Image (cartoon, rainbow, N blue to C red):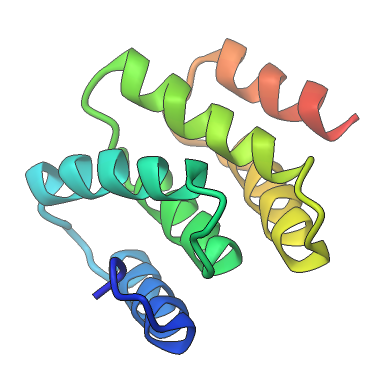
Length: 122
């Protein structure tokens, strides 16, 4: 659904998936890992219409420890940081909120991930 060409379907499905992940006690990691790779690629597409909602989805996946490798996590974090440079205000706001929440979370993120979030926000 996130890959649909309708802006409203993209927004709705991204936000719905984000809420499901946020409220699931033990989300399926294999699915989240694949989803993170796919949504990170979508955020790089200049024609993708639901970047703010997809940034929120990626934040949910990252906080659920959905990155299987360090390179996947780095690519996802890079896409969030790129959102800060977007011309769309909602995209910049979503990226800022996602990075701030990841930086302030007490999860098992490395200090380099947290510091890169803080550095990007500065």
